[in-house]
Image (cartoon, rainbow over all chains, first blue to last red; front, side, top):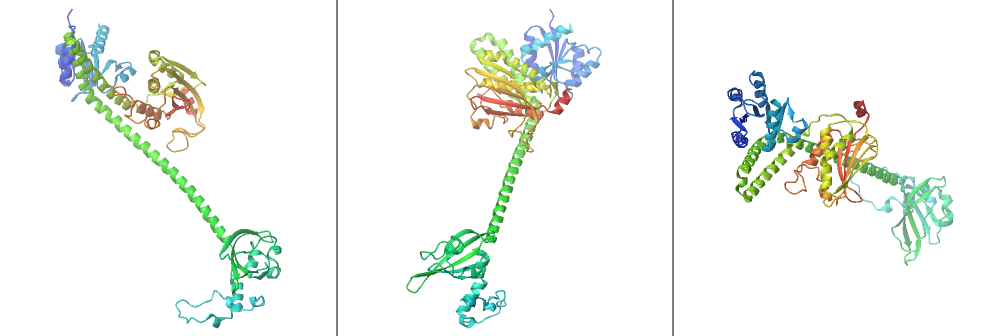
Length: 127
Length: 432
């Protein structure tokens, strides 16, 4: 079975590196990192991910704007998104049904097992 | 002597005297008046009463002042016995000693029925051989002094009352100021929290994911490595707990209210802790003392308060016990924390409130701790088991609902946390 492709957009290179390692270690995912949110849409067009993990607070362009551009792109609008952010707590996420703007929402630092569970759930739903 | 009393009116022109600054040659008294005339003048002019009583107790002289104060004319008194004359001891007991300056304060009742406060000063008179031959009594009408004293006492009372009111309003101002400082402090912490959280949670995310990656890759490197990585993971999660507390604190300053059944909120909150109750061998007693109307509340935040209070109560019962959760509706009847007529009080006497009480059967809380439990970052729990923000958040949430929260030791042991939420007409109106 081919690994599922995940685009990880976060301005923190250390976070994207360690997360890529973790996800790829499972042998089930191929991860591409993008630390510049302005290049996120281009990276997605190029990489054709099955799922995008998207940070919310980033310099130059926030996750909301990136999501808007992705949805405006005919080729990318159906790619599922999971937001990752450090500005809310897990309790906040639970209190909002773990969804913001129709997209799943995970609070950093996210437990790796929880992340994989969320990724699997979203990919299964999108299939 | 008596005839001379009225014979020298000129000597009583007391308002005259010598012009100020004018040099006057001192003259011997004999050059001004005869001793008898002087005595008569003193008797006539003195506003105090002057009474001369001989050693037999017979009144020998009775001045105009004495007549005015006592209410008896001179001719009614002079020559009469001091005791039998005016009925009793109106002139005080006879001096049996050389009681110079002895004084007595009495209330004298005049023939007309008017009461006069009187001060009697008695001076014994002795002859050349030292034999007591009589006494002079100087009688002073104390009415004006009494009035003065009364006025002073009244002023003192007024001043005391004013002082009390000032102290009270000072206390209220101090309390309001402290609350404002506290509110400002909390708001600052809230604003700070979101910024700090973002900056700290990102590195924590790197660390946590990194540790979990290492656990996967090095898990087989032996138990020592597994323990080490486990410790690192625990430490990161602990740091995250602190940040999470700050975020909750920041989030607690906004409400998302709806019309809610408080008893349902209590039930759902209890459901959260059921597992813990069983694990800790704690009995649950749910008491619904009266039907609580539906209220306008932020359900999630009230749950947050209740869960926090119940978790604290459970923590206080390490050896097991009973957790009582009681709901009721009351009309506030007496002043208490946050209840009263002070500007700082959020609830008023007479107001209808929904009440949730959470009681434990633990050892209670020391007074010095009790005073600080609502302070942000104050905790008595061991490191890693509490951020010290739980109760501060609870209080903020209660305040946002125009309610109040308080913690006290019960008289029969254990602690009671009480949450008051307004349940007045406006609340009912919202609910309809």
